[in-house]
Image 1 (cartoon, rainbow, N blue to C red):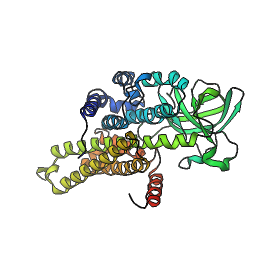
Image 2: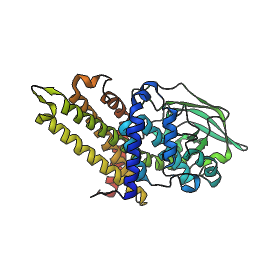
Image 3: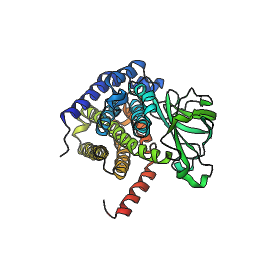
Image 4: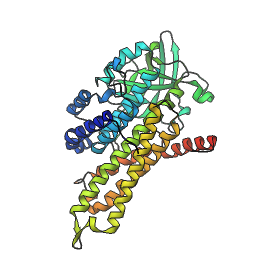
Length: 384
């Protein structure tokens, strides 16, 4: 049996209280207005949620991956837009800097990231480089004390508001080298040559703004190279493994909220002289939904614990992300069906959950990519 420690239960309860009292009342507003209110951002800072895994010496909470998963799960129950903003910030940007940053880089950026003064983003995807990340074309050339970057990054979560972006670019001119010629850079939006494109008009997670990041002879100080030249792909894959745990936790949170909504509606709505919850067909739907959620939760926690114990977790993170995202879309669909016509209106939050869930099968590696990662692992190891 998987049991949380006293500290972990407190973290979960703190996140749940914030989600229920502060976030849930404004979730539809966040979706409608496509931005997270300043008071919500400030409360996240007070709770230390911007720096969950950042070491205490740099102003963070110094917690682990499981703590991050617990927080993201609870916040996702109320607002997926807020949870993905936190996930990218913590698991991709802060994580990359914590693990691969030089001391001077950490001192410069991490206190600001951990305190929520600036929001972090992660720029790997390009117009012609999505699932095939090694085919990226953004070019970085060292000239004196600066790298000159040219290229376009697409679908960058928090791009319109980020204060620091981890950008991946090709430092070796031979594109046939693929992953062996990529480096990572810490890019501030205010650097010369860095501009933000138009904000994307998305179907779901609308409160988490997304845009292109355009690099036109962008001057990036040499000291903002993360790790060393041509080490970027390793950084990208490592951080994405952690990011997939975050999206798995988000999937569990969205699905849990959808189940709660379905149960509440089924107990109130009457047809043919009894509540929906009295019909066996509805009871079986709810039972399957609850079982799938619990399975996804345990896969997510297992991947997080393996990472915290420094055990291999790439396969487990992909399994959690694949199963969790598939499960979330199945559960919200069933929940909407239970709501009937009312679920198709904006009067009930299930409509938003339905739109928000789809992206979990796409970002941080599509479901198809997760199948590749998992199959490679089990074939090479011949067993689970």
